[in-house]
Image 1 (cartoon, helix red, strand yellow):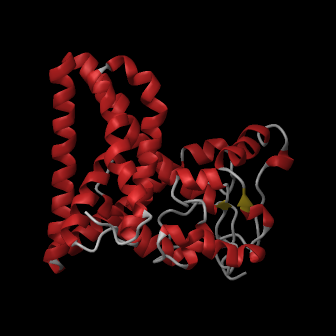
Image 2 (cartoon, helix red, strand yellow):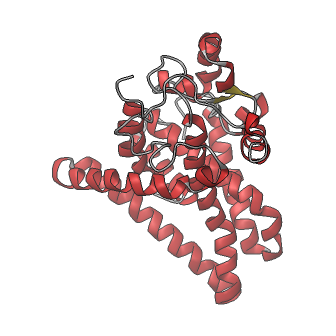
Length: 299
């Protein structure tokens, strides 16, 4: 399978070598579970990044290759990745945390505390469910090709997880087998689903969705962006949603001088340490609203 962009050879290296190596190592040696757990979380997060990138800019020219890759990534991400289309491509990019966005950061609270950020997964998942259901209903009645695509991804996802759970049980019995499955694929799904929603929260909380360049928070560390395939350059992504991930540093450089300094953080870890650990004690470390809040309709 030859990708459309040469930089996606690294995507394929991660997806087809790193992902299975991390997730399936405990199947052979359950004693590796503790050591591989952080890497399983990372694998899931990367699977979420790949799902996001693939739905914006397909990895291959071949439809068959793209379908196979979508099914493969879905297994590690924790959900068939067609769900990104109604919730992210068609909704979040349209409203960007304004009224109408299923992933708004201020649905139940306008604060940015660890409690709000860590439980945002449940809030966002609830808000997105209706869009996914409506998208499936529309596909069933209006688009046979999309209907088959959704069916294939869903079937692949269910069969893959049932098979891998069964293999774990056959190898290690019900108790240890369930632990092996949960510690590998279960952790990967947590890293993918929770991690994607968490990063969406911190990339938009206390930003100004009506601003030309201050609608998103960026994390600009070179190492961090290498590890997450430039997912940190979120302003550039929103302004060029069809651009391949490899172009985002260049696109960010063109607008970085127009972005409020508070919205260009070095790393996610540093941001969380300041905002949620130090900010819990000293208010000066907490985030503050940049520009107009999303809920300030008409202002």
